Image 1 (tube, rainbow, N blue to C red):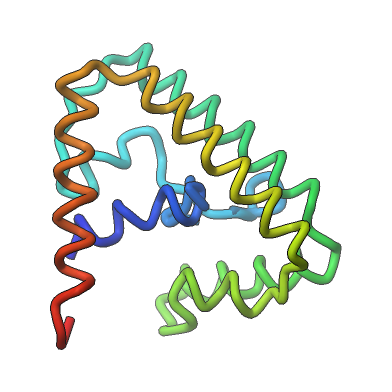
Image 2 (spheres, helix red, strand yellow):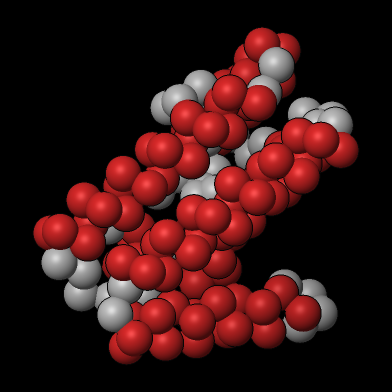
Length: 150
C-alpha cells in the first residue's frame, strides 16, 4: 500500500511530485511528500542530507511552476481537497482530485512537461543503486494497481 502511494508522486508531482504529492498547494498548496518521502513510501534509499536538500528544491520548483499555470478557481478547489484529505476525510483520490480541476489541454501538457522535468532532475540526484531501488518500487506499484480487487 505504501509503495502505491509512493508511485503516485511522479504522477502527482510527479504531481508531486505528487502525492504524493503527491500531490501541490498554491506553492505550498500542491501536496508532495517531504524529503524523507521515499522511506515513508516503503522504499529506503538512504538519501544523504545533500540529496534530500536537492530533492526538496526540485519539488518546490515544480510546485511553483504548477501553481503558475493553475487558475485562482483551480487553486481554491485544490486547497479545499487538500484540507479535506488532511482532516482525514475520504475525499477524491489524487487522480480524481486533479481530474475535478477540469484542466485545459494546454495545462495538462504543461504539467506533464513539469513532471517529466522534475523526474529527470530527481533521477539525476540519485545514485544508480537508488534509481534501481526506486524503479523496482514503481514497477511493484504498477503491478499492484493492475491486480483486480486492489
